[in-house]
Image 1 (cartoon, rainbow, N blue to C red):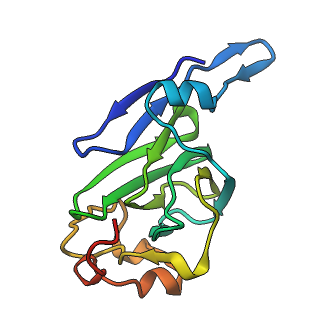
Image 2: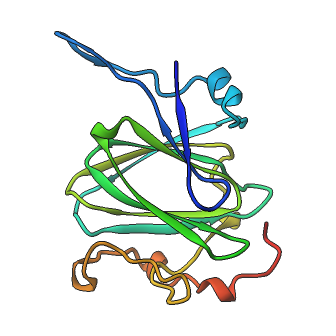
Image 3: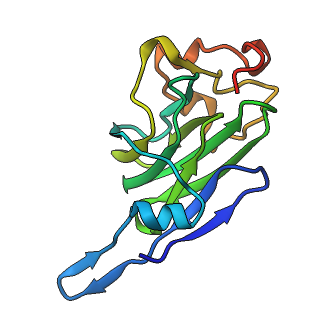
Length: 181
């Protein structure tokens, strides 16, 4: 497997590209190999795989994270559709955004200490992600998706956004306890 890493302007998150092999039968891609990821500087033990299906374009999921000792590294890949992905540094509130689609042959690595969320840009978008710690309800946390201090420019109009009650009622970044990470 030959992967390449593209950093953002904040230290931690990475776009991971992987090769695709195509022939008359279709395609094949090796998307995760622990030894190759370790050689590229991502050394974490993924313990759980998750998948989400988002039925409607404009649905936002996040901004979620887990606090220690259940903090999670995430490796996010799109099976179907397209997303606008957001990663927020929990120490500073700085964030980066990118678009990822199923046909991109790219994934997003989100390290511990970052909140993660996304907006589905197509109906029936399917997101698959590996995590380095199991889900723990007591350590589940998040940040309000439209926190004005984060100034995230979501790619859909407010009237088109669909949110869960949980995500609608998350705290602002400035109201998080200090020293989480």
